View (cartoon, rainbow, N blue to C red):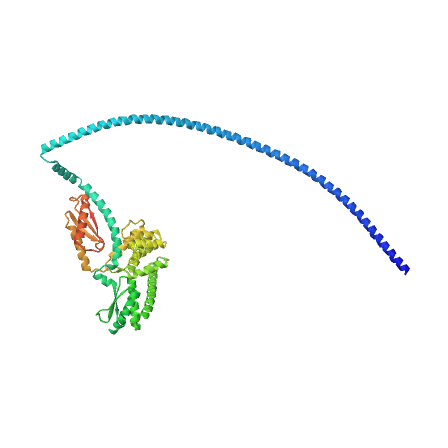
Length: 521
């Protein structure tokens, strides 16, 4: 037991001594490490101080160099500014010298003007005195002339004015001609606007032929069904179509009346469908009218597409195709406007091909030349102005726009194609059978037109051309001079307006020509 205690005590002492020894070793190692760290830190501080001294010296050196450079730049800038100031002072000095010279010149000129003004005042006074003397002399001479001639001042003035009028008759004629052309141009513009708005509403026998459609009925009993109870079917039909439905004593037929041919076609189709079906009441009428409108729209598009294909003008905007289709329902003097447009397209294309121009573009301009007639009863303005606005809106070529604007002579054509379209339009409208007019009436109108011209003194021959839209008058050159031809043209124009009835306008052209002919043998 005692040995065990001693052993434990011995182990504990050994352990304590080991721990103490280890602690002493550790303390010594720590002191050595601390000493080395202090020495290393001291060395780092010394190195830092050395680097700081070197950097400070470098900074000072660079600062001195920068100061030296800035000083040199400053001195150079001061030198340049000083030179500029000197140059400016020299310029100012020269300008001041120039201003002084100018001021001296102005002073001299002012003095000269003052002297001239004084001289002018003196001359004005002298002239006033001379004018008073002249007036006195004129009064005295006028009194002497009255005493010598035995005529009063009014009588002498009439004689002088008559002589002056005879001497200036040519000048007066030329002046009247210029004023007449200006008035005609202005009147032509106004007249076209009015005629375009009224052309679908003119009241004559032809109006009925062009503004009504007749629908056949299977029996008289169908009229009552069309009328409906208390006329409700008629009222509904007219409200939906915008066309008047006329039921009179005509057996087995009703009349559709309206100035819009497209609405009238819609109404005709709707009424035919209602009569065939037999069911006629407001609901059914509305359904059939809507379907007929769709059918007519489809028909218009198909007709327009066929026209574009037939004329072979290339790609066309869908809206323009619809407008072309609407022309199928328009007539001009009985001539279908769409067929007329296609005919003009072909004629213009052939003329362009003969002249080496763009044939396709000429056909396109001819096809669109009357496009404004498709909506001229809906839009204010002439069909020429409306057509120009339409094709310009759809980016058509300038040749097409020019052709539309000039095909009735409102403007001078700017392109060859426009002139060709105007010629083709005149040919298509004037050819025999193009427009509804009897041959007998046509010949009588031409004879009357030529008779008006040949009855004028000095006229040798007269020829009505362009289907009576122009008359060429040949005068006798030995009796009529150039200025008198204007008087004759005006006289014939006034006689035509007073005695004849004619559609559109008639152009009067007076020709004076002298020919000398001989034969070499």
